[in-house]
Length: 390
Image 1 (cartoon, rainbow, N blue to C red):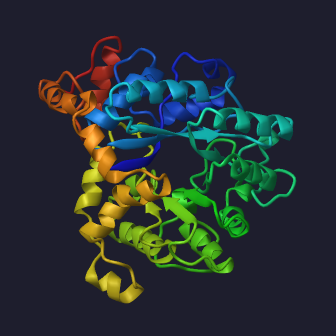
Image 2: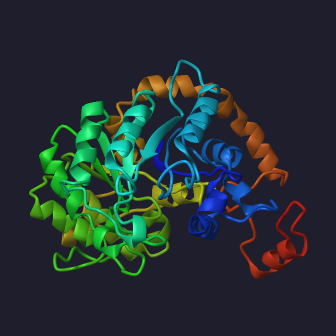
């Protein structure tokens, strides 16, 4: 299983002093734990546990939140490499556990310096994709990927460096976002100019303030804006535009009707081979609960007939949960499975399960902290002790 959208932070990095808004953003997402510094609830060790010991994830793409460089990045590129290297030491046969997104902010400072940074990181051979937050920028102003002064030079640079996967966060508004540059039309437009590259629309332009229903081409918010962009630019299904469902699935899974429309119209229009599994772990703890809900979910025959949605068959779910990502990132599925089957992380799952049963590790399907008022009061009363549910 490949999760294309995961996160952790460096709890003592300079960003904790230089980027107070980002600190609050992260603290607002991270599942609580017993650490005195709540950022430790999303450190490297917790990440490896929640992804590979407390869920069925086998390969993960490690990302970062909006930043303009190491001074305000919760997870600078060097630290991403450190996490990747640590995971690699636990595998056999060179199979990857962790792939890396290199987040760039070309609208901060001198563009040529940003392009040089892209070249430096690409030279490591470890950049699986470049990622941008087009809605984030100096003075609250974002940029467009089809802007010939900023966006197009960046994509051309990625192309020339041989990094042919380009990711953009669209929708899911975050702190200090410029709404006018958080729409998906630009990334879909540039996909036509670079047909030999692959473009991934993170979150599919989903917005929490909007309830997803059947496709409405007149809608000005949510996933429909992404689907309309595909129509506007004549992008056929299963082309070079992909979408992930990180945070989206977690937010809609409790409403079967909304969930069916969300997944159904993405699969129908983007293509069954272009929808990617992502969870935004470990912001919400282990992604296992999201995975279990997805495995159990079905799109009704009624919705299939009425809206033309595909059935969520085992084959379609297998594509979404890993085979599509394997195609995108050129992973040899058989070789990766064999290499990871007996590595120390896989072997440690049994031990981790026993520790969870004994209460020494968080349960697989619950967050790392209190979830009821009683548990919260208990945790607040003894913040320096190990928290366990009452």
